[in-house]
Length: 92
Image: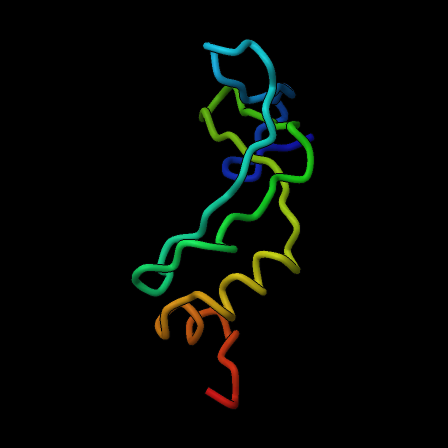
């Protein structure tokens, strides 16, 4: 597997977890640029607690549900992020 940032093949797989509970809890991604006071339905669950990291540049990456991410941005994203990503609702 190649690094998504620098292209190095020096990568390793791993997990993200809280040291306190020593268990790999399910993690979430929360996009920035949401409307003020957006509190519910804004987190996108990370598909699996499987991350990759580059030994050379330190980049860490994983994968999320892109349909859920687009849905969150369409409904909760601010105007700027929706325009930039081409996710504006023609009715709004």
